[in-house]
Length: 313
Image (cartoon, rainbow, N blue to C red; front, side, top):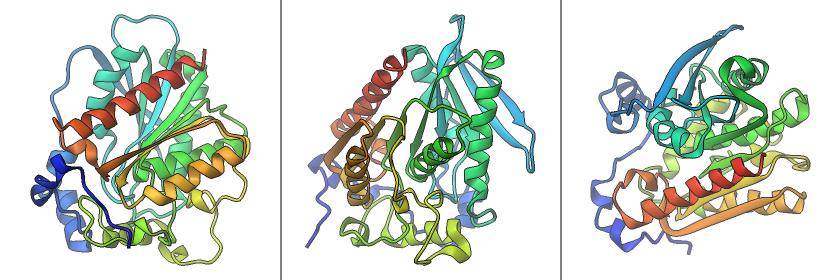
């Protein structure tokens, strides 16, 4: 039997970990801010980064937030980021503290997209929002201080699933040359057929929450034998021609197996792919601030992004 063995330091904290059993009632409460505020609420920020919001006009309009390190001139590489939240929760504000650190450290511009959430907006709406923001970033690169030749994408959890799908869409539409994809514990496969996705008793993100998120995102398409790869990147049959990928996931994460399989398939398709699987790390390990394994996980992702940016030169 496949068991989720937690890192010893985390095991003692697991009883106090945030419980995310998604239901309609929980979702309504979380949207009001009654729950999950520690994840999605505002956090203290420095004055080292300038943040400006831009409206991408369309049907509907999409808002992106541009994070630029103060004191840096010229065109900088860009990290286009998609927040997580199981397709049903979260906001682009979740990226504020991340880019507050990374933009000055890595010398890059961060762009966060406020995509519509499920179940109010199901596929393909959220992905099209992400694409609209990406295309706007490329088309207005000079205005935003971005080097249009050095744009990569990044996402965590459901945001990682959207980022993987966005890489496929950008490849196929041929309008924006994406240089890399950073996929952090990406939510890739709606079928939940792997051993790790069928585990019970997972902390942070349970099997039932995963089902809830996919049902909300796919709507009437949930359970379909045939599904667009843009809806769930694991369904893609052709992964050739995609940008280099960095994938990181925890060994105690329900997404472990689908992420490993996706990384292997990328490699088989000729896509340069770096994969990290941290034993004992659950989904959302980053929330356990101060633990050794969370520090290692975040450092690996930081270093992967740093190398990806350097390789765009």
